[in-house]
Structures are given as structure tokens and as C-alpha cells.
Length: 201
Image 1 (cartoon, rainbow, N blue to C red):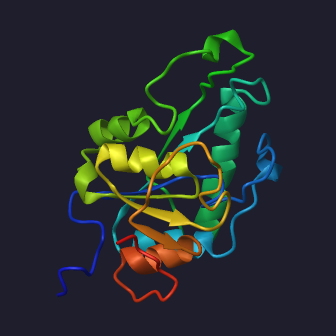
Image 2 (image 1 turned 90 degrees about the horizontal axis):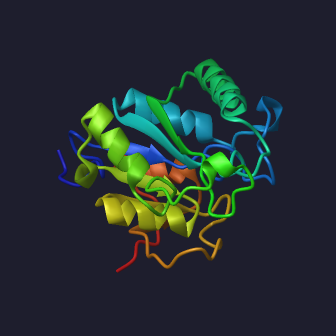
């Protein structure tokens, strides 16, 4: 077996941002009907499942802090997402979200937290809950904040060109790899050749 067959090593996990990676990066995803999958994302997650890799969603949900939706609304969106993934033969093993925002209009969520990416709190919570070795893991995101969170946590990082495609301008971070979408990221994770890969030297 090639030593580079898997980017994720035993004990590691695949961390996925939600909006822009799994679902389309739209202005608001405040209701289940607002959730639209990126083309090929469901099958990409199913491939990770078939490879017996742990798949964990790590998502900032500052809309809660801004009063656009509640935590109960988000729970219903995620129940819908899980149902739709299951219809495509896929599943995620856990979902972690940060409801805080530095400009929150809902006072409860105006918190200087350790979970909002690019902070690493959600990754550390997943590590502790699920026994994950972060240094054997990969973080796939569409934003610089995803990449920076992954780097800070010790993960390998893959930036996808869907969603923000790294053009969010919120942080400075260089990913290990840049690929077209989640399907291409899974190709890379599972050791397949990917001509679109532009790994940083």
C-alpha cells in the first residue's frame, strides 16, 4: 500500500465546513428549504463513508447571533440535511456549530468565544468527544477562516473553489491543497490522482 494512499491517517477524521462545501453558499440558510447541496457533495461524502472515515461538520452559524434563525431552527435544518444525505447513501458522524458573532444583535450570543472559526474550539470539542487525532486529520473548507482553523489545530487543509473559494478575505492562510470541489477533495483524501490539485509548495 502506498504511504500516500490516504491523507487521513488511522485515528484521524475528515472535517467539512457546511456552507460552500456541502451546501451552496447562499445569502441565508435559515430554513430547511434554503439548503441546496453542492453538485456531487452527497456522493463525495458517501465515498468517505465507504472508506470508513469519520466525517465531522464544523460550521460557523452566526446568523443565530444576528437573529435570523434560532438554534432550534438550525437543528431542523441539520435534521433535513441528514435525511437528504441518507437518501443518497451518505451520513455525517457529528455536527458542531458556533452560534456566536462579534457583532451579534442577540445579546446572548455576543461572546468572545473560542469556537468561531478561525478559532479551534469546535475542532477540539470534536477531538475530545470522538477521540480524534487532529494531526492525522484533514479539514476541507471554502474560506480562509476554515483553512486557518485547520492549520491552527494541526490538520492538513484543503480549500475548495466552491462557495467563497478562499476569497472571503477574513484571514491569511495557505492551504496544503486547492481543488475544485468536495468530490475532488475526496479524490485527494482517498489517494486518487487529481489534475486540478494545486498543492502549495
